[in-house]
Length: 239
Image (cartoon, rainbow, N blue to C red):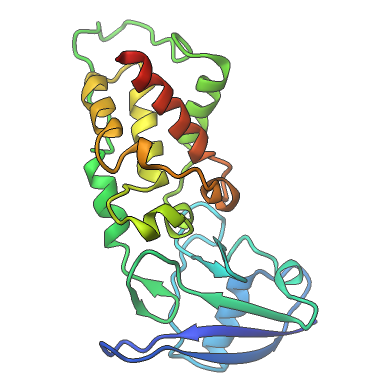
C-alpha cells in the first residue's frame, strides 16, 4: 500500500522552529512504522533522527507520538495506523524537550525515576535461606498489579501522554508511581515506610488527576493508574 509519513521535524539549532515534512513510500504487508522510518532514512533523507534498538517491543526506545497518541513504532503496524487517506502523523513525545526531529531529551523522565530510588533495598533481618512468599499480604488484584509492574520497559509513553504532568511538572508521573508500587509491595523490601512517604508526598500519587491516558498508551498493559490507586489506598490505611 502507498502511505504518507507526515513527520514533525525539529532542527538541532536552539530556538529553531519545527516544520512538517511528508514522505511517500510503499509499505509491504506486515511492515511496522519503524521499518518505514528506516526506509525514509536510508533512501530519502539520511538526516531524519529517531530512536530505536531492539525492534521487538522490549527496549521502549522507539516510542513516539503516532497519530496523536504515544506508541512504540516497532509494534505499530502501518496498515492499522494509516488513515483513510493513507497518512500517518509522527511527532516526538510530549513533556520532554525535543533534541531533534523525533528524539527527545529523556532527562525529565529519569530525574523522576531517580527520586524513587529504583532498586531493591533488601531486608537483611531475613534469613538468607528463608523462602519468600510474594503473594503474602496482598489481594489477588494487588498481586496481579505487582506482577504487571515488572513488565514496564520505561518507554515513557505514559509520561508523555499524562495531562497532569503537562500542567504540573511537579507530578512525578505514572511510571515513577509504578516503580514505587513495585518496591512497596515487594516482601523483601526494607524501606517500605520511606517509599510510602515519598508516594504520599508532594508530587506523588495523590496528585494524579485520573485521566487514564497512562493505561491507554501502555504497550505492556502495566496499568499505572491501578498501581496509583492501590498506593493511595495503602497510604490512607496506614494513617
